[in-house]
Image (tube, rainbow, N blue to C red; front, side, top):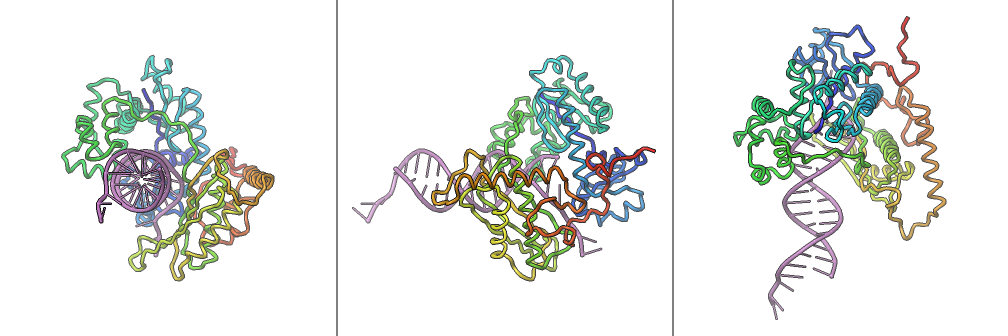
Length: 430
DNA sequence: TCTGGGGTCCTAGGACCC
DNA sequence: TCTGGGGTCCTAGGACCC
């Protein structure tokens, strides 16, 4: 038995938390560079604002309807998320944090929950809301896919009061019959289209399909979904594994047409990715550097550039990685392209004890230790003295450039204060 | 003018090995 | 001249998730 707890309109709810004046008002949150709408409060959804639309298309509409608009404030969301998750951890021994605003709980071997699932679900909801101010929906089912389905019902049907437990076979069947196939966890746009073509429109129609047939047509992933809908658990609680791939990339607030500027942007991403790499105590063997102009322009040809670098010995040293990135950039750079985005991807990731040494490497062990000590010190300094307003770290490599002089840096014109993570942004009650 | 960013898993096909 | 059968590893691409 699994529970799925999902925060309601998470980013928008976070923005409302410290702004009581926004109660019952429509609020939307934008993606990086104030590009698209990525979160909407209940009121904003009721106005008909769609998820994922470019902001410039609805800017006027928002103004006319007094919609409060925010840039995304990840420092705030990440901190609030942590509070929600630790509250859940105090209420259940097995918690899998699935995303910034969702968590699965495994209930089967937790008698406190199993005794009365509905009561437990309501307790989860009430306590999280009381401790954090974030409202959540709770779905409980025999498998993760059913818990997801229950969660969807808890949000959609007000009669559930935000908590839906799927144990009654007749209810499950009824809910499946009135729910569109596209709502199922694991069925995306493509699968929905293909399923519709075969006459499968509702969740129930997928649930009664022969799993073997689904496997032949769609593969094992959708077969598992089908089995899960029938109560056979195929997807368990996952433990936190080190990432096998680390990406850092971002669009620029304005186009870059200069090799030096583009290289600075890439070096900034290398530094960020390298620090994530060290956070999970890993080393990387491959690095891929990429940049591109806009894919949406009709007047320019879409020109993605990319290049790879293989390290002789897996590394986590920012200096080595930036050196490699600069080398790759100088090889792949194409002139006269109006670049709109760049980034870096690390792969071939291994743990400390798995590093394959280079037979011809002249670096001694003590040199290697010095390297990691230096990087640890950089990380320590940067975590103790948090980024400034321009996102500049305290200690950085010169190739990254001075952020406040970089006109292409992400724009966040509608940024709210970091209420919970910056001392100067604390709310003052007079 | 302005369109996010970061992940996972699975499969097919080619290169290569014995 | 004839050229099997079984396996691994890697990569690219396609699907999905939030």
